[in-house]
Image (cartoon, rainbow, N blue to C red; front, side):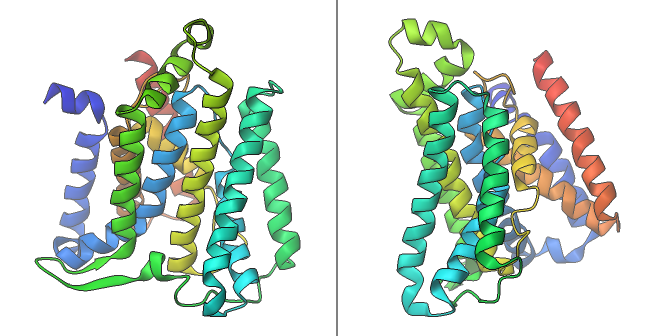
Length: 310
Protein backbone atom coordinates (compact mmCIF):
# COMPACT_ATOMS: atom_id res chain seq x y z
CA UNK A 1 0.00 0.00 0.00
CA UNK A 2 2.88 2.34 0.80
CA UNK A 3 4.28 1.80 -2.70
CA UNK A 4 0.88 2.57 -4.25
CA UNK A 5 0.59 5.83 -2.29
CA UNK A 6 4.17 6.71 -3.18
CA UNK A 7 3.38 6.30 -6.89
CA UNK A 8 -0.07 7.94 -6.62
CA UNK A 9 -0.14 10.40 -3.70
CA UNK A 10 -3.37 11.89 -5.07
CA UNK A 11 -5.23 8.58 -4.68
CA UNK A 12 -6.74 9.36 -1.20
CA UNK A 13 -7.88 12.77 -2.47
CA UNK A 14 -9.39 11.16 -5.58
CA UNK A 15 -11.29 8.56 -3.53
CA UNK A 16 -12.59 11.25 -1.14
CA UNK A 17 -13.75 13.50 -4.00
CA UNK A 18 -15.41 10.60 -5.85
CA UNK A 19 -17.22 9.63 -2.65
CA UNK A 20 -18.41 13.22 -2.19
CA UNK A 21 -19.44 13.41 -5.85
CA UNK A 22 -21.43 10.18 -5.61
CA UNK A 23 -23.03 11.35 -2.33
CA UNK A 24 -24.13 14.67 -3.82
CA UNK A 25 -25.46 13.43 -7.15
CA UNK A 26 -27.43 10.18 -7.72
CA UNK A 27 -26.38 10.38 -11.38
CA UNK A 28 -22.78 9.46 -10.49
CA UNK A 29 -23.96 6.36 -8.60
CA UNK A 30 -24.72 4.76 -11.94
CA UNK A 31 -22.35 3.19 -14.46
CA UNK A 32 -23.42 5.63 -17.23
CA UNK A 33 -22.74 8.53 -14.84
CA UNK A 34 -19.22 7.31 -14.10
CA UNK A 35 -18.61 6.74 -17.82
CA UNK A 36 -19.66 10.34 -18.51
CA UNK A 37 -17.23 11.51 -15.81
CA UNK A 38 -14.36 9.57 -17.40
CA UNK A 39 -15.34 10.79 -20.88
CA UNK A 40 -15.18 14.42 -19.78
CA UNK A 41 -11.96 13.90 -17.81
CA UNK A 42 -10.20 12.05 -20.66
CA UNK A 43 -8.63 15.13 -22.37
CA UNK A 44 -7.10 16.34 -19.09
CA UNK A 45 -5.77 12.87 -18.21
CA UNK A 46 -4.23 12.47 -21.68
CA UNK A 47 -2.65 15.91 -21.46
CA UNK A 48 -1.29 15.31 -17.95
CA UNK A 49 0.32 12.03 -19.08
CA UNK A 50 2.04 13.81 -21.97
CA UNK A 51 3.23 16.92 -20.17
CA UNK A 52 4.67 14.70 -17.40
CA UNK A 53 7.61 13.90 -19.71
CA UNK A 54 8.52 17.60 -19.97
CA UNK A 55 8.05 18.19 -16.23
CA UNK A 56 10.12 15.16 -15.19
CA UNK A 57 12.84 16.28 -17.62
CA UNK A 58 12.91 19.60 -15.74
CA UNK A 59 10.89 21.86 -18.07
CA UNK A 60 7.46 23.38 -18.66
CA UNK A 61 5.14 23.31 -21.65
CA UNK A 62 2.66 26.20 -21.62
CA UNK A 63 1.74 25.90 -25.31
CA UNK A 64 -0.62 22.94 -24.94
CA UNK A 65 -3.87 24.89 -24.58
CA UNK A 66 -3.33 26.96 -27.73
CA UNK A 67 -2.29 23.81 -29.63
CA UNK A 68 -5.57 22.15 -28.60
CA UNK A 69 -7.45 25.15 -29.99
CA UNK A 70 -5.46 25.05 -33.23
CA UNK A 71 -6.22 21.32 -33.65
CA UNK A 72 -9.98 21.90 -33.38
CA UNK A 73 -9.90 24.90 -35.73
CA UNK A 74 -7.60 23.17 -38.24
CA UNK A 75 -9.94 20.18 -38.29
CA UNK A 76 -12.90 22.41 -39.12
CA UNK A 77 -11.07 24.54 -41.68
CA UNK A 78 -9.54 21.60 -43.54
CA UNK A 79 -12.62 19.40 -43.64
CA UNK A 80 -15.20 22.20 -44.12
CA UNK A 81 -17.69 19.67 -42.78
CA UNK A 82 -16.80 17.07 -45.44
CA UNK A 83 -16.38 13.62 -43.88
CA UNK A 84 -14.23 12.49 -46.82
CA UNK A 85 -11.50 14.94 -45.72
CA UNK A 86 -11.25 13.68 -42.13
CA UNK A 87 -8.23 11.42 -42.75
CA UNK A 88 -6.03 14.16 -44.27
CA UNK A 89 -7.23 16.58 -41.57
CA UNK A 90 -6.20 14.18 -38.78
CA UNK A 91 -2.83 13.63 -40.49
CA UNK A 92 -2.40 17.41 -40.76
CA UNK A 93 -3.11 18.12 -37.09
CA UNK A 94 -0.64 15.42 -36.00
CA UNK A 95 1.94 17.00 -38.33
CA UNK A 96 1.22 20.38 -36.71
CA UNK A 97 1.73 18.85 -33.27
CA UNK A 98 4.98 17.26 -34.40
CA UNK A 99 6.26 20.62 -35.71
CA UNK A 100 5.23 22.54 -32.57
CA UNK A 101 6.83 19.99 -30.25
CA UNK A 102 10.02 19.83 -32.31
CA UNK A 103 10.36 23.61 -32.43
CA UNK A 104 9.80 23.88 -28.68
CA UNK A 105 12.35 21.16 -28.02
CA UNK A 106 15.01 22.53 -30.38
CA UNK A 107 14.73 26.08 -29.00
CA UNK A 108 14.99 24.82 -25.41
CA UNK A 109 17.66 22.15 -25.95
CA UNK A 110 19.91 23.78 -28.56
CA UNK A 111 19.28 27.55 -28.30
CA UNK A 112 19.14 27.32 -24.48
CA UNK A 113 16.05 29.49 -24.07
CA UNK A 114 14.22 28.60 -20.81
CA UNK A 115 11.28 26.33 -21.51
CA UNK A 116 8.77 28.61 -19.78
CA UNK A 117 9.74 31.50 -22.10
CA UNK A 118 9.90 29.31 -25.21
CA UNK A 119 6.50 27.72 -24.73
CA UNK A 120 4.94 31.05 -23.70
CA UNK A 121 6.10 32.42 -27.06
CA UNK A 122 4.76 29.33 -28.82
CA UNK A 123 1.46 29.73 -27.00
CA UNK A 124 1.06 33.25 -28.39
CA UNK A 125 2.21 32.30 -31.90
CA UNK A 126 -0.05 29.25 -32.17
CA UNK A 127 -2.96 31.21 -30.74
CA UNK A 128 -2.36 33.94 -33.31
CA UNK A 129 -2.27 31.40 -36.15
CA UNK A 130 -5.54 29.87 -34.95
CA UNK A 131 -7.24 33.26 -34.74
CA UNK A 132 -5.94 34.38 -38.15
CA UNK A 133 -6.91 31.08 -39.82
CA UNK A 134 -10.44 31.15 -38.44
CA UNK A 135 -10.94 34.90 -38.65
CA UNK A 136 -11.68 34.92 -34.92
CA UNK A 137 -14.92 32.98 -35.34
CA UNK A 138 -14.77 29.53 -37.00
CA UNK A 139 -17.61 29.23 -39.48
CA UNK A 140 -17.14 25.55 -40.35
CA UNK A 141 -18.17 22.51 -38.35
CA UNK A 142 -16.47 19.19 -37.75
CA UNK A 143 -17.86 16.16 -39.63
CA UNK A 144 -19.29 13.34 -37.54
CA UNK A 145 -16.43 10.91 -38.21
CA UNK A 146 -13.92 13.57 -37.04
CA UNK A 147 -15.89 13.85 -33.78
CA UNK A 148 -15.99 10.08 -33.22
CA UNK A 149 -13.08 9.99 -30.74
CA UNK A 150 -14.70 12.68 -28.59
CA UNK A 151 -18.30 11.54 -28.46
CA UNK A 152 -18.49 8.14 -30.13
CA UNK A 153 -19.69 5.12 -28.13
CA UNK A 154 -19.41 1.36 -28.40
CA UNK A 155 -22.77 -0.16 -27.52
CA UNK A 156 -23.81 -3.48 -26.02
CA UNK A 157 -20.71 -3.76 -23.83
CA UNK A 158 -21.24 -6.29 -21.00
CA UNK A 159 -21.78 -4.69 -17.56
CA UNK A 160 -21.14 -1.16 -18.87
CA UNK A 161 -23.91 -1.04 -21.48
CA UNK A 162 -22.08 1.49 -23.65
CA UNK A 163 -18.43 2.55 -23.53
CA UNK A 164 -17.27 6.02 -24.67
CA UNK A 165 -14.48 5.83 -27.25
CA UNK A 166 -12.64 8.60 -25.39
CA UNK A 167 -12.31 6.30 -22.35
CA UNK A 168 -10.59 3.73 -24.56
CA UNK A 169 -8.28 6.47 -25.84
CA UNK A 170 -7.55 7.49 -22.23
CA UNK A 171 -6.56 3.93 -21.30
CA UNK A 172 -4.40 3.48 -24.43
CA UNK A 173 -2.54 6.78 -23.91
CA UNK A 174 -2.01 5.99 -20.23
CA UNK A 175 -0.65 2.51 -21.07
CA UNK A 176 1.65 3.78 -23.82
CA UNK A 177 3.08 6.68 -21.81
CA UNK A 178 3.48 4.44 -18.72
CA UNK A 179 5.39 1.89 -20.78
CA UNK A 180 7.53 4.56 -22.41
CA UNK A 181 8.47 6.32 -19.15
CA UNK A 182 8.81 3.36 -16.79
CA UNK A 183 9.72 0.39 -18.97
CA UNK A 184 12.19 1.71 -21.55
CA UNK A 185 15.74 3.04 -21.64
CA UNK A 186 14.35 6.34 -22.95
CA UNK A 187 12.28 6.74 -19.77
CA UNK A 188 15.36 6.15 -17.62
CA UNK A 189 17.18 8.88 -19.54
CA UNK A 190 14.27 11.28 -18.94
CA UNK A 191 14.59 10.75 -15.18
CA UNK A 192 18.37 11.15 -15.33
CA UNK A 193 18.00 14.37 -17.33
CA UNK A 194 15.55 15.84 -14.85
CA UNK A 195 17.47 14.74 -11.79
CA UNK A 196 20.88 16.08 -12.86
CA UNK A 197 21.44 17.25 -16.47
CA UNK A 198 25.23 17.49 -16.12
CA UNK A 199 25.55 14.02 -14.63
CA UNK A 200 23.25 12.65 -17.33
CA UNK A 201 25.44 14.19 -20.04
CA UNK A 202 28.60 12.75 -18.46
CA UNK A 203 26.87 9.36 -18.30
CA UNK A 204 26.38 9.46 -22.07
CA UNK A 205 22.72 10.48 -22.23
CA UNK A 206 21.96 12.43 -25.44
CA UNK A 207 20.32 15.14 -23.34
CA UNK A 208 19.35 17.43 -26.21
CA UNK A 209 17.60 14.72 -28.21
CA UNK A 210 15.86 13.39 -25.11
CA UNK A 211 14.58 16.87 -24.26
CA UNK A 212 13.31 17.40 -27.82
CA UNK A 213 11.54 14.02 -27.68
CA UNK A 214 9.82 15.01 -24.40
CA UNK A 215 8.37 18.14 -26.00
CA UNK A 216 7.25 16.15 -29.06
CA UNK A 217 5.44 13.63 -26.83
CA UNK A 218 3.80 16.48 -24.92
CA UNK A 219 2.58 18.14 -28.14
CA UNK A 220 1.27 14.89 -29.62
CA UNK A 221 -0.82 14.25 -26.52
CA UNK A 222 -2.15 17.81 -26.89
CA UNK A 223 -3.24 16.87 -30.44
CA UNK A 224 -5.07 13.81 -29.07
CA UNK A 225 -6.67 15.97 -26.36
CA UNK A 226 -7.69 18.44 -29.08
CA UNK A 227 -9.36 15.66 -31.07
CA UNK A 228 -11.24 14.56 -27.95
CA UNK A 229 -12.31 18.08 -26.98
CA UNK A 230 -13.21 19.12 -30.53
CA UNK A 231 -15.22 15.95 -30.93
CA UNK A 232 -17.04 16.36 -27.64
CA UNK A 233 -17.71 20.11 -27.47
CA UNK A 234 -17.23 21.31 -31.06
CA UNK A 235 -15.14 24.15 -32.49
CA UNK A 236 -14.41 27.44 -30.74
CA UNK A 237 -11.45 29.80 -30.39
CA UNK A 238 -11.09 29.05 -26.68
CA UNK A 239 -11.61 25.28 -26.61
CA UNK A 240 -8.04 24.84 -25.31
CA UNK A 241 -8.59 27.45 -22.58
CA UNK A 242 -6.35 26.96 -19.55
CA UNK A 243 -5.77 23.27 -20.17
CA UNK A 244 -1.98 23.69 -20.06
CA UNK A 245 -2.09 24.99 -16.49
CA UNK A 246 -4.67 22.37 -15.52
CA UNK A 247 -2.40 19.62 -16.85
CA UNK A 248 0.58 20.98 -14.90
CA UNK A 249 -1.58 21.28 -11.77
CA UNK A 250 -2.84 17.71 -12.24
CA UNK A 251 0.70 16.36 -12.65
CA UNK A 252 1.92 18.20 -9.55
CA UNK A 253 -1.07 17.00 -7.53
CA UNK A 254 -0.15 13.52 -8.74
CA UNK A 255 3.32 13.80 -7.23
CA UNK A 256 5.49 15.02 -10.12
CA UNK A 257 8.16 17.39 -8.83
CA UNK A 258 8.28 20.71 -10.71
CA UNK A 259 12.09 20.76 -10.71
CA UNK A 260 12.14 17.37 -12.45
CA UNK A 261 13.56 13.94 -11.77
CA UNK A 262 10.60 12.39 -9.94
CA UNK A 263 7.06 11.31 -10.73
CA UNK A 264 4.94 8.60 -12.31
CA UNK A 265 2.38 8.42 -15.10
CA UNK A 266 -0.06 6.70 -12.73
CA UNK A 267 0.38 9.62 -10.34
CA UNK A 268 -0.24 12.19 -13.08
CA UNK A 269 -3.37 10.34 -14.24
CA UNK A 270 -4.76 10.08 -10.70
CA UNK A 271 -3.96 13.76 -10.17
CA UNK A 272 -5.90 14.66 -13.33
CA UNK A 273 -8.88 12.57 -12.24
CA UNK A 274 -8.75 14.15 -8.77
CA UNK A 275 -8.64 17.66 -10.26
CA UNK A 276 -11.58 16.94 -12.57
CA UNK A 277 -13.50 15.35 -9.68
CA UNK A 278 -12.86 18.56 -7.72
CA UNK A 279 -14.24 20.64 -10.62
CA UNK A 280 -17.31 18.40 -10.70
CA UNK A 281 -17.86 18.76 -6.95
CA UNK A 282 -17.48 22.54 -7.17
CA UNK A 283 -20.05 22.57 -9.97
CA UNK A 284 -22.41 20.51 -7.83
CA UNK A 285 -21.98 23.11 -5.07
CA UNK A 286 -22.78 25.82 -7.64
CA UNK A 287 -19.36 27.49 -7.36
CA UNK A 288 -18.74 30.07 -10.11
CA UNK A 289 -15.94 29.81 -12.69
CA UNK A 290 -13.75 32.60 -11.16
CA UNK A 291 -13.85 30.95 -7.75
CA UNK A 292 -13.04 27.62 -9.36
CA UNK A 293 -9.93 29.14 -10.96
CA UNK A 294 -8.87 30.59 -7.62
CA UNK A 295 -9.27 27.20 -5.96
CA UNK A 296 -7.27 25.60 -8.76
CA UNK A 297 -4.41 28.06 -8.19
CA UNK A 298 -4.38 27.45 -4.45
CA UNK A 299 -4.32 23.70 -4.99
CA UNK A 300 -1.40 24.03 -7.42
CA UNK A 301 0.58 26.02 -4.83
CA UNK A 302 -0.28 23.57 -2.05
CA UNK A 303 0.59 20.54 -4.18
CA UNK A 304 3.90 22.08 -5.30
CA UNK A 305 4.78 22.86 -1.68
CA UNK A 306 3.85 19.32 -0.62
CA UNK A 307 5.88 17.60 -3.35
CA UNK A 308 8.87 19.88 -2.68
CA UNK A 309 8.94 18.62 0.92
CA UNK A 310 8.69 14.91 0.01
